[in-house]
Image 1 (cartoon, rainbow, N blue to C red):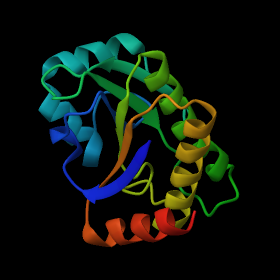
Image 2 (image 1 turned 30 degrees about the vertical axis):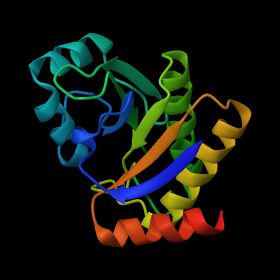
Image 3 (image 1 turned 180 degrees about the vertical axis):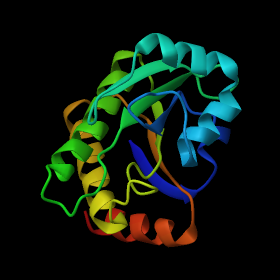
Image 4 (image 1 turned 180 degrees about the horizontal axis):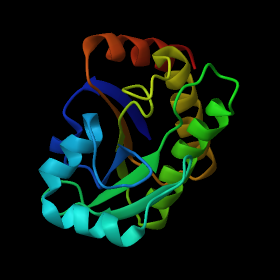
Length: 168
């Protein structure tokens, strides 16, 4: 399995599944969530409405519609509240649940955004350590993925992922 991080627009990736850092309603929002909804088209919103929301730490899956990816896995990361509200475990669950769904739907290539690192305020370094640890642990237990990409929104975020990937 190849794991990489790069600065890229997740909505342009031709992977089997992309992960959406969604809010609990799943009905779109700002950041990567809004970008995915805009790029996928109105069918995504209708599909998300039918799902009835999603709890923090969980994930749901829809088709990709107008995206180059076949699937969109919507996961709800925790809002950072200083680290004492079970944020780390909830974020880890986002990665585990997303990979489980990707596995269940036979996705071999997968891309993640920096879940909870935008408006939810999770510190990038800590979130990246959780992301890399969980992705590698799942892939070691279930070697079904060919490629996993961490889609970074800036060079600063890429630097964090590059550093963490090199040492973890």
